[in-house]
Amino acid sequence: MSAPAARRSLVQVFAKAPLPGQVKTRLIPMLGVDGAVELHCRLVRHTLATAVLARVGPLEVWTTAPGEDAFIQSCKRVLGVEVRLQPDGDLGARMLGAAEDGLRRAPAVIIVGTDCPTMHVDDLRAAHHALAAGDDAVLGPAEDGGYWLIALARCDPSLFAGIAWGDAGVLATTRERLHRLGWRWSEVATRWDVDRPADLSRFAETPWLSSLVEGLVADSAPIQQGTQ
Image (cartoon, rainbow, N blue to C red; front, side, top):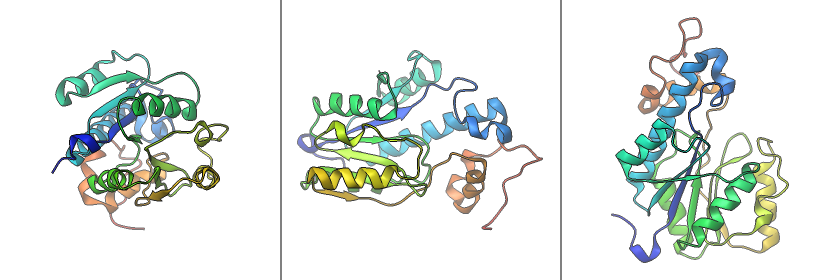
């Protein structure tokens, strides 16, 4: 069942334009440039499909230049999503810009990237319901010490300023700042991101994700079947 219109959350998916050599760069040694682009595109489609199925509210893709990229525009045509360009600056500045923009148009925003293949519709629904119940913020912790989701019913620049993005302390810093603001907040499930070659082996541990890497890994570096 979809969320009531008065309580809908705006889902903002951060997705880079799939330019060769600019996406999934740490996986290029294993997948090649074209394979890295293909994996990125598969993860974008997977994330958008999950967000559509969650039915918590309207969906937007916040992309990087060129915004008219054929793949991004195909997502717009197929799913009917809005496409917006991320503002300039580091990741924090870009999320702040998106959140502030979204909160002018909706009572709550849920920001996710496309590197978390195990994101589930229940995660998005839990974040949406927590905000509707009065939480100011919701975090989705990542195993690497960051977060894969941040959902907000209000916004403060301190949540995003001066953070070393990609550092293992991102989540702890954000929790500390939420405490300092005195906000009511909660967390959804801890998930893993696809960032490094070692992460590719984890697809085999989750059978319903195996199609995302099918045909991508070279014979010289196969994905190991089963757990290690």
